[in-house]
Structure formats: structure tokens, C-alpha cells
Image 1 (cartoon, rainbow, N blue to C red):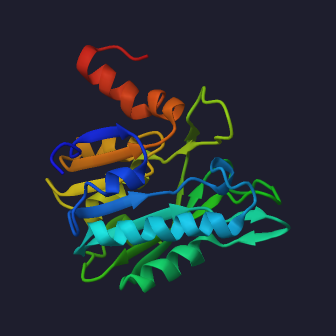
Image 2 (image 1 turned 90 degrees about the vertical axis):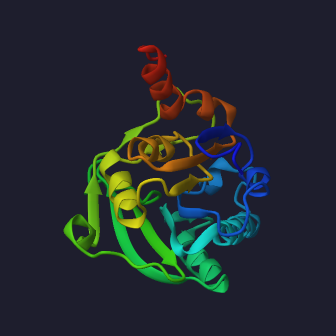
Length: 231
């Protein structure tokens, strides 16, 4: 476990999960890859197997008084809506978790954009077994609206949006404390582990795709932090 803490890892999350003991993480905060970013094409059944497998591992590795936060958009595919948030809800309940809180996170690009194939908001699901949340400040908002930006210069099927810093800080501030371990097993741009590091948390970030990993914000900011120059 010590060799993966405070690292942003290029690798398969399920390989790294094998190195993580039961109940070793205080906060798991992630968004799984969209079905279009997987090898499954339009095979919803295969994709949901991945989602369930991920939930099983996140539930296993997160402490009973910790939190699993999954924030992801639903999808329109095969002429119908793919309700990702319902899959996660059922999978986490099967693992003994309750849905402690629920928010809509709007990616403002703009709010009133019309697109029959794409949702501009994410369901932010907050799961725990025994954790408590101090309900104050911005946490009291049920709908969160943030400007977002893309992770540029990445080819292939990826249409990656980077979560707004303020959204990440809200989740980390209210659901963890300093020196807690924050894990993002599907880290994409690496912005969650980077902000966790800035907020004096220990962190684990994992990203499978090599190009996304190499061009991630984490790698760029880490280089800037260490050498005073960006890529």
C-alpha cells in the first residue's frame, strides 16, 4: 500500500485495487469512463459489468465511516437513456452502503445548451456506511453550477471535461480531513489527486490511458511545481 500512496499511477485500476487492503481509503471520489471510452461499443451489459466491478472494489477499499462519491452523467445510447446513476445506486446498496447525499452538478457550457444526445449535468452520488456530513455552507446547495474546461490535445474517443477546482474542493473539504487518503481510481486529468495534495490529503490517482496520463493536469502541474515550467 505504501508504494501507491501519494502517487498518480499509469495503470489499470483493478490491478492497483489488488494492492489496496480492505477499508484503507477515507474518500473515494471518481467518475468512471463513459461507455464510448471503453472497448464495449454499445454493449450496455458489458459496460454495466465494469461499473458493478468498480463499485465492488471501491466499496471494499473505503472505510465504513468514509465516503464513496461518484459523479457522472447519464447517457443516451441505442435510442434510450442509459441511467448510470441507477446502476451505481444499486451496486453500492448491494455492498451495504446508503445514499447519504445527492446533488446535481451542472457543467456550464452553457446551462441552456440544446443537445438531444448529451446531458450537460452529472449526478453526484455520495455513499457511506457510517459517515456523517456537516451540513453547512455550499454543501447545502442541491444544484451546483460550475464552468468546466476540456483536457486539450487528447486524441481518440476521449471527450474529457476537467472538473472545476471548486467542485473538487467542496467534496474533499466536507468529506475528509487533513492526512486522510483520497483515491480517484479513474482519474483522467488527475485533478482530484492534485487538489487533494494541495489540501494536505494523501492521495492515490490511477489512469489507464497513456496519452491522457501523459497530458494530464497532474503531470503538468507537478512538473511546474518541481521545475518551474509547464509542458
